[in-house]
Image (cartoon, rainbow, N blue to C red; front, side, top):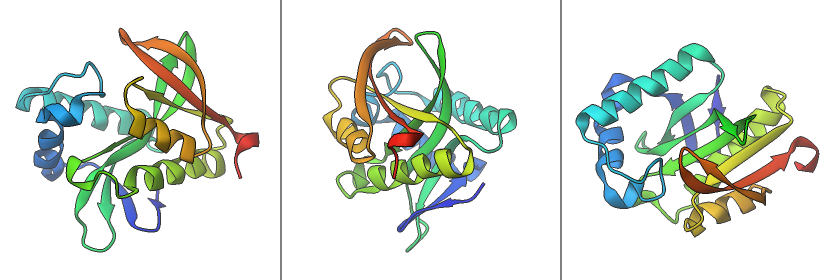
Length: 172
């Protein structure tokens, strides 16, 4: 799996990326709209990293990938194509999480568009979704900039989420 965009290289997480992941997961502002909205201590972040690794084993063509800037190799966040169950239906979520120092620089939109194109072009998916907290306006704009439309409100892991979606025939 090789995914790149204009400014980003997508690559699998490795153990040496753990400090970066832990910093994101331990920051209350970073996790406000992610998962259950609670920070993760070192053990929690490690369990998350192992979950990411397990995803690579289950499907080597998908999963959360570290986003590195092409210009200097600096990690700016992660994004990926992840299987989700939404109201009993199997979906493919385009997820993105950019570190606070890199907010408002267009990285999330750039990553999400590259993943959308990868899902449709390379993997032949017919549909992609993004599951977004109702208060996360920035993430909603990213989804809209990728051509997604608000489809419905749903309960995901006990939290309300907006389901933004795009079908392959709406793309390009």
